[in-house]
Image (tube, rainbow, N blue to C red):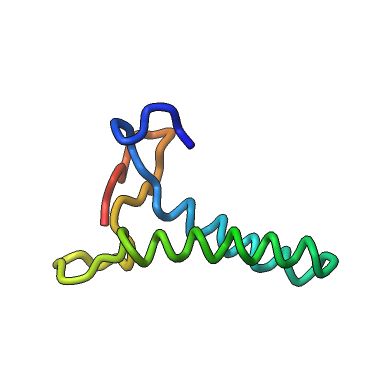
Length: 79
């Protein structure tokens, strides 16, 4: 957790990518580790679904509060 939350930028797209990676890794490891990876991914996806879906907005994106190019300071907190 970033120490400046809630006073910092959020990147919901990074969380979605991390969750996808955990689900992919879960298919490659032993059952106990896979269970931990899936549980972590499910927590992330639940958080995204609960507070970051672009419902009822004119946004073309699926998620709110995403970042496209942080190093160049472009597309910060979009969606």
